[in-house]
Length: 71
Image (cartoon, rainbow, N blue to C red; front, side):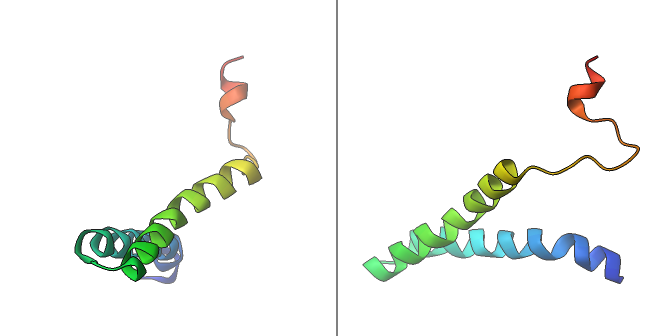
């Protein structure tokens, strides 16, 4: 795997692993500690989505933005 591929897939893979851990801890955990861990780890992907929606990503130069394509 080259460096560019690793850079692209590092964060999605980390979020996927957190999600799997959260789902497994919710299914298999029997105490409040596991429930807190599951809620926390399952909230991370939602927090990332909210962060990027609020922050917004500027369009790359030369790319047509969605709002410009409709005109």
